[in-house]
Image (cartoon, rainbow, N blue to C red):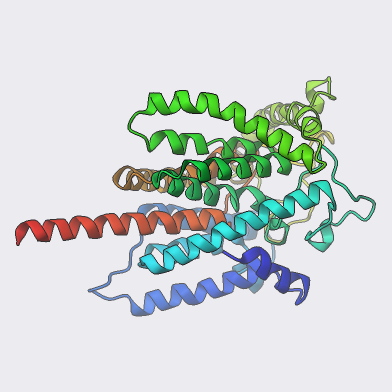
Length: 415
């Protein structure tokens, strides 16, 4: 949960990549579970984990067989898919007690507040504040209206500013909403909207708006709650606007230049243009390697850092990659690898959804659903993000708590 700050130390001072270092420790966790698993405490290996493992094995097959890359031991801990699998396996086989969960929850709330404060500083005062060294722009001071900001998360990944923040944010708001603390709910929604706007990433803004689904779904009188927030939402947006302007942030400029892209007349210059281009290029190139895919030539293990010639030529400098995650998935790994990942995602979300129905805690499901939604506009196949991992931990805690209460009730009735 403290990964942005730990990564600042490991990467910024010790020059050790946090994600790779942490992945090494996940192997120890997996090893301990395998050692101590027994008949009274059998090892759990659900269907979704099986398909995720098969997908990961296919990714390795693609890199070292199809692309003929040289295998290195480092690829066993530098691949975030491995870290994701190990963490899911560990959480699946751990029992999350109340004291531990509440400690993590309180810690996460503090981390979110720090994240909001840091991104405000980056936008209004110093764009390079608490930014990873290779992302520092020495020619810039105050952030522009279109430059994406990463808050505290640049140290742990390029998309961690969304997948690290939003799932935890949804959990916090749901908890306050269930406690009927309306004023605190409005305060946190305000923080979430301010944060998402300052990231300048539309997919984060969309995922943040899921907070209103969280609120509506937990109320019995959903229509009354809907009417309430029909009035409240414009008020929150207006309050966010004036709050940002009061500290020197040009909120209107961000909305016009980044969100609406008013300065770009041609659709090919807009973000929507790169998605349309992705569809056109995919339809043109995919069928040449439809079954097994072309491989992750640019970003994969042993990647060249350059796009394959056919894709580079088709993109014609208008985009760095296929900016639709699912198209990129099938282009790189074909029908075989793509299907394995989608089956994993289906069973994974199905499990979390069924748990949410039982527990009436919907934030874990919506937080993880945001990962699936995000892949409509970006490329991310790893859940090695603190927000996603905490959503899985929360789901495990809620379902164990529910099952324990049902067991007590059942035993009480029998007595």
